[in-house]
Amino acid sequence: MSTRIRRIASLSGANALRELADSLAVTLPCDDEPLAAPHSPLAMPLDLPSAAGASRLVAANRFVVQPMEGWDATLDGRPTALTERRWRAFGRSGAGLVWGGEAVAVRTEGRANPNQLLIDSRNAAALGALRRALVSEAVGAPPVVGLQLTHSGRFARPDTSGARPRIAFRHPVLDRRFGIEDDGHCLSDEELRQLVVDFGEAARIAHAEGFDFVDVKHCHGYLLHEMLAARRRAGAFGGESLASRMRLLREVVTAVRESAPQLLVGVRLSIFDRVPHRPEPGAGAGGRLGVGMPEPHDLPYRDGFGIDAGDPTRTDWTEPLALVRELASLGVTLLNVTAGSPYYVPHVQRPAAFPPSDGYAPPEDPIVGVARLLDAARRAKQAAPELVVVASGLSYLQEYVPHVAQACVRAGWFDAAGLGRMALSYPELPADVLAGRPLVRERICRTFSDCTTAPRNGLVSGCYPLDPFYRERPEREALDARKREQRGASR
Ligand SMILES: Cc1cc2nc3c(=O)[nH]c(=O)nc-3n(C[C@H](O)[C@H](O)[C@H](O)COP(=O)(O)O)c2cc1C
Ligand code: SF4
Image (cartoon, rainbow, N blue to C red; front, side):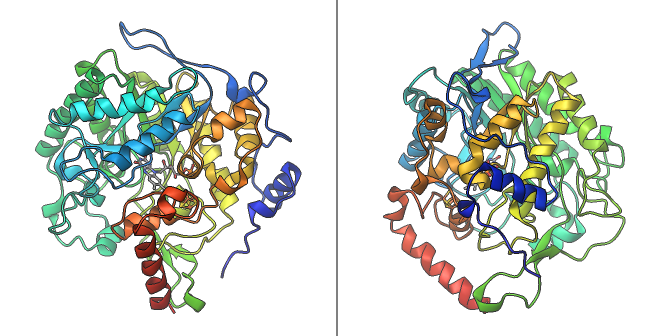
């Protein structure tokens, strides 16, 4: 059954948003009006604990640009003009911290697509130039800039010759869904040990090229996130105990700290997950996608991190909060809290009014998903107050991003508010909010999901509906044609 969604743009003010949240039985702190600097909690500088021998780092405010990849690097993993355009926009945003720019693979095999950035000695200078281009756009104090390091694991598609996903363990639901038929895709313990070395080397390069921190990416279904759920995996890195499933995380963080002691270490973590969802069969009337529902699965459900085994549509907080505390004791200083995966539970990972082409109609009001993500950041901050905690999933709030972000930061729910899709449609939103300027309505992300649908169809990502630069690109027509075809196919 489809959920009636009250459009955010139709709300008459903060009070209406609060009433909507109440009617959905979720808690969503929300101020009456956004405040400008210096009165806004979002304008407070954020001190980052310094790494050994490094100078003190301060983010000028509490806005963060989330990592947003564009599927637009060269085949050998270097930035193109499109990549640079996006990073420059992030630099102009006015955000105090840029979390990673985008996912960068630490080895070829781990690239999510043939056009993902790759960090190695050949590409080092180009990545350094990208960082400098971003910083050169800053209007006030330059932002703190990290680089997100990844291996895409199950979702690695490093070349066009065929899918070569590498997995942590045989997952009964995801293997069926994504056509994994044999154990050959499983990374061996030996391969994981080599990966630890690769992460260390990537961190050394990132430090040499001037990045302030690296993010050891543990989210969205990619390899290091999947390892946290590897109960079915034998050997040193899997099994029932969380300590074994965290072994790779510990070894990677240690390698990163040893090879670049002056670099801060962050982790972007899918702190909870859900059983994979798919559109309700036969429900896609009128070319619409069916409503999302859980894929068939066995109970107890053992194959996700932070999932209640008895009811995998709920969170079990025991392991996630233990892991957060472990991060703090390992010397990680920044935690970016996200959840789920865009491939199998997009409504959890990026709440949206309009689903991407490979998704499903929202099974809940997206406000519920936003509130769940913000509450997760609150729990992480409570569990390890020494970590600098960044929240994700705010873009669906549209006009009310500043109202909610400032209320949450003031209440100490988390330290900083991350902007993902909004940073594509309207990168300068932080600068406008802090300067007390009214928001530019035509640039507010309405969660149309074209920036996800385009790469799912082999096209570069960008905000096709709202950014005139992408609206006028030839890919726009291809994207519209693809969407028409898919609507026809689901009739
Ligand atoms: C086009 C696109 C690219 C993304 N690229 C990345 C990425 O490289 N790394 C990452 O951790 N998350 C990535 N994300 C997820 C976002 O960082 C963010 O978590 C998500 O969009 C939800 O936040 P929002 O509501 O502010 O958009 C991407 C999302 C989109 C839509
Ligand atoms: S395409 Fe633009 S409006 Fe749509 S979700 Fe992406 S950033 Fe938002």
